[in-house]
Amino acid sequence: MPTRIQKEASEESLLLNMGPSHPAMHGTIRIMLELDGERILNSEVEVGYLHRGFEKICEHRTYFNLLPYTDRMNYVSPLINNLGYVMTVEKMLGIEVPERAQYIRVIMSELSRISDHLTCLAAMAMECGAFTVFLYNVKAREFIWDVIEETTGARMTTSYIRIGGVRADLHPGYKAVLKKAIVETRKVLKDIHGLLDKNKIYLNRTRDIAVVSPETAISYGWTGPCLRSTGVYYDVRKASPYAVYDQLDFEVPLGERGDNFDRYMVRMKEMEQSLRIIEQAMEKMPSPSPSKLMAEALEPAEAIKASRTKRIEKEIKLSPNLEGSERQKYLDILGTDKKYVVPPKEDTYTSIEGIINHFKFFMRDHGIRPPKGEVYFSVEGGNGELGFYIVSDGTDRPYRLHLRAPCFHIVSALEEMIKGRYIADVIPTFGSTNMIGGELDR
Amino acid sequence: MIGSFFTTRFNYILGWARKYSLFHYPYITACCGMEYMSTAASHFDWDRFGTGWTRFSPRQSDMLVVCGTISHKLAPVLRTVYDQMTEPKWVMAFGTCTVSGGIYDNYAVVQGIDRIIPVDIYIPGCPPRPETVLDGLIKLQEKIQKQEQEWRWKKRK
Image (cartoon, rainbow over all chains, first blue to last red; front, side, top):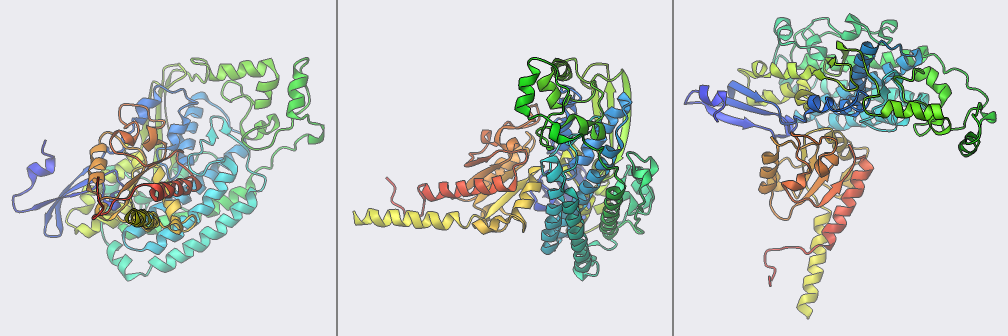
């Protein structure tokens, strides 16, 4: 079946197919170009190569079980996706989240934002030929992932932010690792500024290329760094603050021209602001409530033995990592509402109520059941406003879940951005949109 | 007798040379691409194991690294890329989606790339850690070393 561009192209022009197996197209997008020499007369962007049926599959998963799927949408910043989904469900249920958990969420989502921007710029610069930038950025990202890994236990797809709070408390030694990550990231950002800001080759490929006016950007529904590069002041963190963003001091960097270079620059400045947010959140975070004397606590084996005959009142020794979370920590990070939170493991293993709670939580048609209705909530993702729209019919799984993917709107403007430019301009332009297949095609 | 001795030695040397100069074509579609980037960049640096830097041209590469979910829409493209590669060639299935479809057990996703192309090494994980990938790579190198090599003037039975 001929595509639109094949029908409309004039006879003299050359049709060229770019992608999906083109190195700059990230394997998941195809651009058909109508060319006059090197100049692009028209183009058609075809998406859908990474359609994984996310929205459909969510209709068959319970609210708790579909969390891992949200990790894999914008896979460069999975924790923000978690946060967006979880906060939508919390809005539906009307749950209050403990303050410490709020701060942990902010730290985690800012770390993810940095890794998102680093990856985007790494790919964009690499595709322009600046390979060193790629290596430096990935190096910085490793340090950030070390922090995430230490607390969540996974590098990327963490499923760490849970309905009602977060899965585990921060690792005891997180401060040292986090500080190291901040120092290293600052160093890398300085290096990148030095490598690219006045680099003639990079400037030639990005300055005044693919200029987008604020009106066009808004009409396409752009959000996030790409919209801000055109000079429009819109950031979900400022416009409708969630978590504890209203208590933190940060700026929203804006661009002036809306070209590729501005999109790069806005991302660089945003990373600096994210680092600032993390530092403030570290300072302001309420310390965990003092734990009871662990010396009195029972060993797990003893506890199970004792629980066979009578109910045990003492605390149980369990390592403070993801394998055995403790009842007392739940107050700080997850809340204790049995309807929405998986009961602590020591309760499940040692008391009959605990085991009933556990089964009630995981059994089909018994878990989290929000009231009938629909809800929309959005957070500031790596690419822009990441919104979830959930329709609930009162059962334990969503009737319909829709994701407002920010990069879908940005990529939809790609045809207009590259029109009249050269083929070589497609690469930095496409790189600066930060197309993420999982989010775009869902 | 002496001829067969040289043939086996030559087979061994060829295997040794091939396993340490794996030019790869990364077919990156999804999440695993991020871990691929980590593995390839300076922290984990799989160039240490002779997996030389990326060749984005199927005709010049020896190993196809399929990272990330392959949907039914993408399957013909992957098959074409595989067909374009010249012998000898190996395929690495990177991540659970390529191994078995992973958590995406639905209408859109190919349930394992071995339904469309032959696979030499499966690396599970969603996504696999870079250490796992390096382990898989070493196993693939062992496999290349042990396998019977092909060359142009080889006598065929």
